[in-house]
Figure 1 (spheres, rainbow, N blue to C red):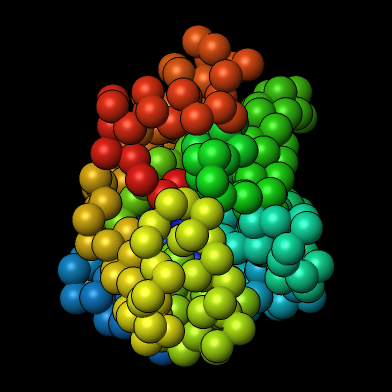
Figure 2: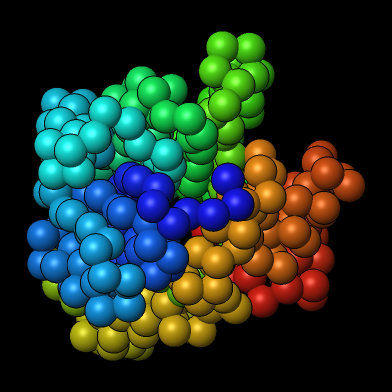
Length: 321
């Protein structure tokens, strides 16, 4: 699919980050876009920006939907069919995701499963819902967002990262299997798995809000957990006040977005270029390429401190994808 003009695209998580940029860049090429997100307010911002840059007649629609709930995903599908008056779509970007609940031992089962359900079932439900509409098109492409944590289940030796990594490994394997499945049963539909490194988005703060751990509203108990984590990392926080801990957490979140080696706009361009080239495997960012190589070179050491030292020497990677 070399040209997106006149096509119909579906984007989950279109309210912020890479989702917002995908909507903007697609619509700027004359592609009609249907997006969903849990935030109507953020989607309105995306829609406004997209329509200001899009050719006249381009449609950009919004639908509030939690992708971890299959009924809401199916309602989104029905919304797309009705609002765009179509029985087919050409592009489905299963992009929505959150991060958190890294530990099976410390974090609650509720937050663990919420993270896993958005990042894995959001992709699965989106694929189930929209695959018939893709097959009904003359050319279609499904693009599932995994992560570097889909081949490296870590944020470094001092941070647990189980829920997000498990989901992203599932997305990667699922999409790779779709390549053959589609080739055998719907050869006009392609599949790509996207594996970003550290991209400048609001995923950390958005995830905190969804999981009840907003960095700007940390409870005393959550501050104590953050302090303990910092102590394990060797940071001198014994004489630091709770408010200073809160400010440090907020600064870390803001730095994740503002000091990333790649912006969401740059990442989305890489993704769309990969779709045009029909690449089934789209690595996004120099850190993603470096991590991919390093893990392949010595997988036995991938979770040792020495691996992180090599990674930090070669990239600007700091807190995951």
